[in-house]
Length: 122
Image (cartoon, rainbow, N blue to C red; front, side, top):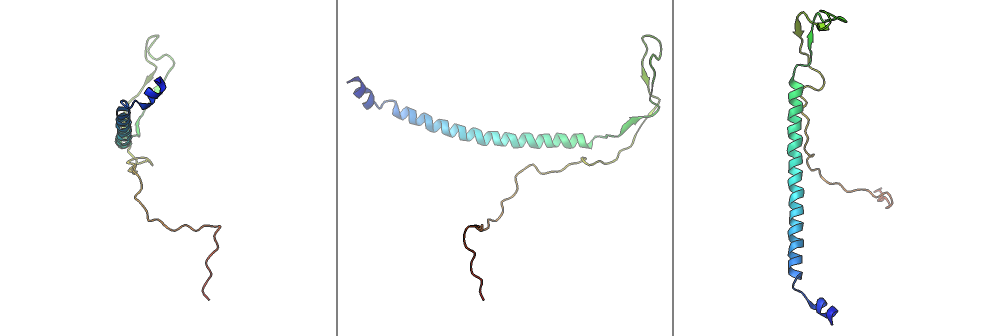
């Protein structure tokens, strides 16, 4: 009798169906939202990479010298006597690669290697 009563009880069915529908829509929305977040983060990291690539990477010091104990016991070890930079372009400067997906391409008919080839016209 109790099992028959539980089997015929439908009061929670609508609530469960609504929750499944809402949960499905939320998961689909989260997937789309996280995909957009991923694209935005990737584009911003590409901008950061471009910023680092635009920095001068050839800054150097001339007259660099080092001694074991220069200036006594608590002195400094290394000194420089002037500086210069030469800015040359290297391979990864201003990398303007596209991070987005490729555009759609036209579909072509695939040849099945198991099917017989069409007869040639003579």
